[in-house]
Image (cartoon, rainbow, N blue to C red):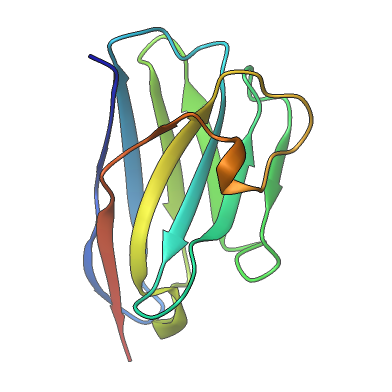
Length: 125
């Protein structure tokens, strides 16, 4: 059974930091592109960050660039999202996703094949 399991979410004050993890199981994801998305109440799911299969290419949404860092450890089948200088507008459920045929930067959620269940991030002002 293929699974992506996010962890590391929680409640943090504005200006604080959190590190999200996404652990993959059921198959090897080392050849997949990986992404982080988020969805706030009443809003559509939006792209946050992307990393290529070998970590050589990353991309970020304008709203998080300079504050968030995506990374991966293929030996551990895990992807991370380090979130610094958090703002109340970062409050959302955060999802990781895997794209089997990743070519270029993938920001469209429909291009991802596997999704985690999400982890809540709440930033208080």
